[in-house]
Image (cartoon, rainbow, N blue to C red):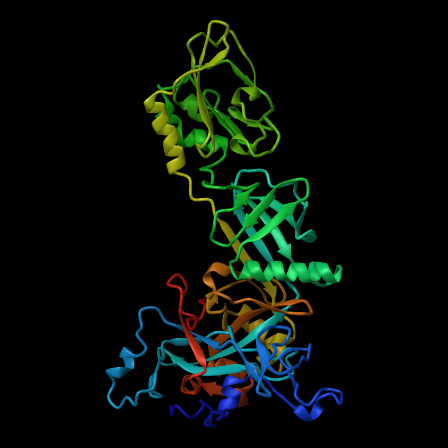
Length: 518
């Protein structure tokens, strides 16, 4: 196919350089009568800023430069891993010195939404609708920076420390910005942001929530306070800091799981092992693993509620002590010893689910556990618990509903885009990073911010979050869903403008031009 022609035989549009680098529709004839002559009006979003010379708009993206509206952060092109964009075409005959020649079948770059600008509310085509080829297939990527009020962050905090009660309010700078949700096996989840905090409370709450969300998305540290719980600092890809202490290890498992993993290694070295855990505390001699090893009963009796053999709930209150409980003295959870089974000289190991806390005891003649030096062989097993713990990290997932007018920038019949995504005809990405599209109605996407380019998130004073989003599909499918074919441009036109910043794709991300498989 002629690279200057669409598959329907019509020529691609030939935008001016201004359109390529300035994807905003301006009509100064509609400027308010009271706007000063030296100001420029930005129509990138409904705020419609009137920007004075040398100043920025409310979003910090557009400014008045010598009387002209200028985008001050560039469009970001993602470079495919393993490619050298200067050396790769240089070997081609007839190369004219451009970054990528117009004859390249599959330029190893992807136009991301970062720096693309927005057309919200989308009564006009998206800022960039780019045609390219991938493995000989004509593709289209529709690129924009969406403005999202209906968005939030799900934060996964690897810790056994008590952060706060479920549903407790999470605050930032004194304002409510979210709440505590459930615990999932060594990780506490927080739900932060969302439309009710952005627009449903006071103006200050909205501004604070928006600033907090933008910082989280841009992988910066954020300090949070949980009502009735902890103060913590979270940052994507970094260990959480709980009450001023940086977490080191994510637990290897609950107390029962830890017993099961290490039972054989403790067998013969200890007469009883208790693994303390806020959720399920394990007792080796009673546990199924101990029974399989024919361990005799030790006579130990723990506080709390007994579940199945060797598993105890609620041995203590949640806290920042051993195994996520509030205890610092492990003997506090022992209620008594049954003299029928307990005997002087019995060896007792008490340990937490991360191995960070451990103690060795020997029963005296009165069946009272006395501290003793831990044998090296036992110490090695305790250290192995720590060896099997993953590093404690914070994961930040961005969740946004893209089912509104943003779709009109893609097609004149928005529901077709929604259906095409559900039918796996469209690959949705955020800054080139893969997203999970939630089942059910609408287009609800979730993405790990650590896989997105740095600085992907901005804001507008609505308040709302600005973030990149891209829709990639086959050219024929784009035409069939009523796409804005007259606004399609070739990737070479963007490259020829030179108005972009080149960034490397994460090696962990699939190449965005690969369509999802049904």
